[in-house]
Length: 114
Length: 114
Image 1: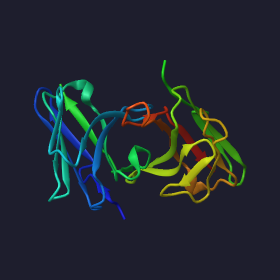
Image 2: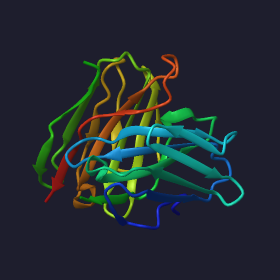
Image 3: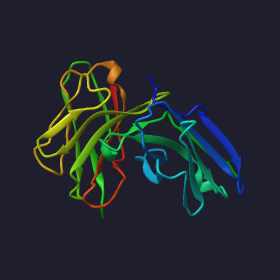
């Protein structure tokens, strides 16, 4: 039972345009969400997070939006750059567990076309 | 440099031959975790540890053992590996006490069980 779903295995975006990566979750206990970025032959690295008390969090070119009623979050990257090409994982946790008990999605491979 | 290290990075073994993948962190983090990454399944947590001598099962613990005798080390033990344990393994560490809400991942260990 996949509690965190990323339905798009891959996405290609022109350099300079907006990249939108989507994530859906089913567990209503989740109240903290994170995005990780992974390059080949490296471990995932933290990108941005959002608490369920917010609906938006912005950090430079990266913005995460949370729609609790729809159990949906999205990551916006604007403008997209070639270095953004990577696999992006959405992750979620319930506050009781903190970030040591993360449930990950299956990942979306983003390719930025120069 | 703050980092999580894993050894070996690559390992090919045969069914039933016990192996250990080591994980070490130099950030004095109290939390450590092991994940496996498989195509179409994303990252799934195997075991995690809240502190020295405190470990708990994640989502896919069958066939694995861990120990946490020292704060910096969290080895993953496969007593009798089987082909379905062929995967990419990541160790991670984190700390709420340090005010961080992210997990730091190691570079990964690619294991093939023949």
